[in-house]
Amino acid sequence: MARRSPGGARASTSTPGRSSSPHACPVRPRRPSRRPRRPARPAAGRCGAGSGAARDGGSDAHLPGQLAHPHTVVHAEDLTTAAVLSGLRAGRSWIAASAAVELDVSAEASGRVAGIGERLAADGAALVRVTVAGVPGGTVTLHTEQGPAHRTTAETVEWHTDAAFVRAEVRHPDGKMAALTNPVVLR
Image (cartoon, rainbow, N blue to C red):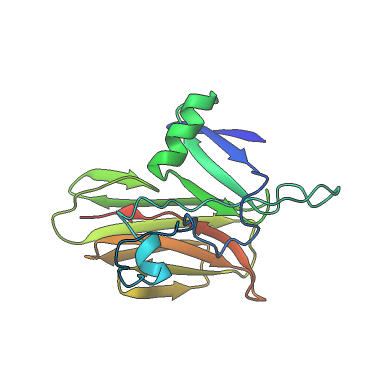
């Protein structure tokens, strides 16, 4: 499935072998080492802005009606393999529970705008905008380095923050995940 959007192509992928849970953060398993172990950081620290661990989602389902639930939506310059992989590496992607979910997240400060997986370098508060479609009655939660920071049931959200990063989670009224983004880095 591929859809065009302003600013480039948008590729949606379902990757066999990836976690089937949109809650998962891709973290490579550790190999045994003879070096002393450092204390493990909590998952939120491993997946936050600047960690180099971008979120992606997929399933290993092979039955009709289960394919692409969930899947990764990649903001890419075009639909070539190189462009899609570049978008994934940069974190310009988000997880959608189904193809019905549409999501746009951006932050603006001092006349500059950044989207998912991009860096804004804001000098002060940034205006974060989230637009959601395909999740009637859903809840949008914005997370920063401090954890959940803003929650609403609106389909369009505008929120000011001076946080270092912001990412969005969208849940259906029953609490099931509908979408999960990589962060927009604000500092």
